[in-house]
Length: 129
Image (tube, rainbow, N blue to C red):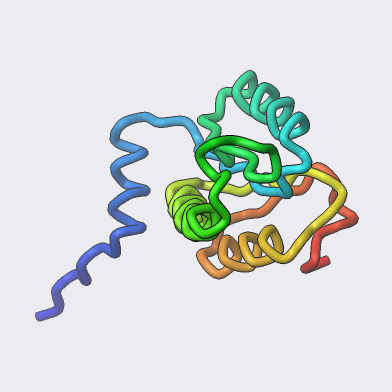
């Protein structure tokens, strides 16, 4: 007798999203130099009926939360982990901007390794094209 295999956590999450009737979840990735473009993409994706998650802060802009260099490095690592969690949560990725740096390139590779579709506002910068 054969038993069905247990669902993976990813499959259980997808099933839960369907049962809850949730719209598609899009995570925005890209250099924080494109924060204004990310806000515009957030607006357009939201109007299209999607749930949007994106970077929550721009560490290139001065702020007391990351003014201490040692603390800023640890915070950057935690925020990178948080953004990978957003990618796992999302149904698809939208990369914003006409520049792909090392962090964004790593996020794209991570998303693709999970089988997430990746869209680009500037398709010519797709490192996989």
